[in-house]
Image (cartoon, rainbow, N blue to C red; front, side, top):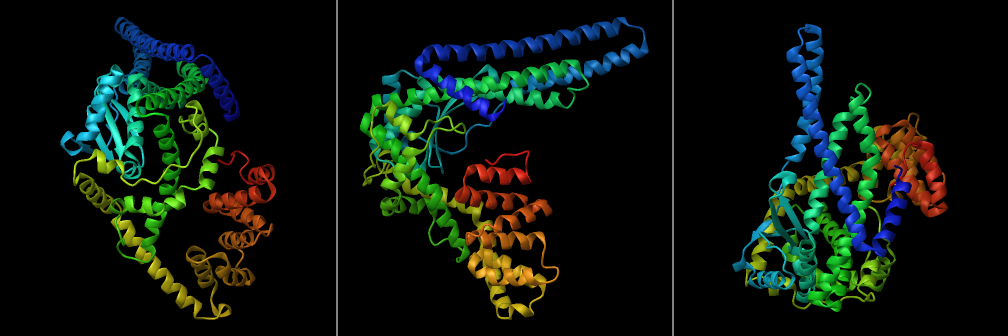
Length: 508
């Protein structure tokens, strides 16, 4: 199924889901159950066929027939093994630092209240992570046969950036998934998808040689897009129900502020906080401050940067896509009948209330240490690379451009593009293009970058030349050219240009 057809199917199913949520849920449950019936039926059929082959081989006295039967039996065994392996496959449990009641008494008190009010299952493990996120995960210990353990994952950045009442809304939202049995269904659906993909990959290579393989592959190709669309819409429906649980437990105001803050602050942390953190490696061999220990102050100090009307308008105008089961901000707020309002600054964050005294600082130090262990080698390597590159720029820039050989010009232009800007690199690139032998794909790429930065339409011709003549430059060249044409001439022109280079693909 093509992307446009899949998108149309999802949009149509969303209408069905909105008009009759319970009927739609029953339909998805029936599809999921049918998938299991087909799966176990296929396994039973393969086992029966294998038993028949074994019986026939035992009764046969012809060597050639026994060899053919043995080969067919081996193929059937491989299919049976694939199905059984995925059915019994244990997914890795979620990762994080386990939090016990003594370290977060008020957080666990909230969970106790949620148990009593919503009558859901117990949380078996509370894990602190380094992400700006919160989630409930059900881990199946016995494959598709169950044995679930419930994990609550709470990102320390989320605790440091949220107000206590908003954190209640977050916990109620996540626990609401358990109460609706959403997480168990999601785990079951995820395992089914894994099974179908594994079966398809195993069978596809032999589809032309085996009638049974070809039939199963065709069935999967037909079934899986519809299955994905139905389960996607169901997951999105579950998000609305979880938001209603948050409203019931924390109120409309706290829930709406949580939704807006999570979107705006989450975007800022990903877009500005972490890139700014890593930019320090360009000038310092060690970080000037550690990320998690500085995050609460950074969130407060930069409130006027991330909590802006412009950012809220951008988030409000975004539409729900097919890459995330969470609805867009507009649809989630509309569903709880709240208007978009900037969340107020947080004076006392959730971490200071929900965690015991000193535990927040302890967790910050632990996550900082883990982060540095993972990133220290790359950080130091980046620092040394930048220092050596800047020294090399100074060395090459000291000589007149006309006196530099082609290779040195290439190096100077490339380094200036990486560490300075296109205007600074332009003289070296122009000089390079004048030289005999200077016209090569990498030089064309650099010249194209300079021209499109100046708004010159000729730049995409040089980018195209680079893409067509050097496969290693293809991705960068077409992305830069596509973005330039998209902003200058519109999507239709940009797509035609992209298609003239890679007609089999469409830009993401």
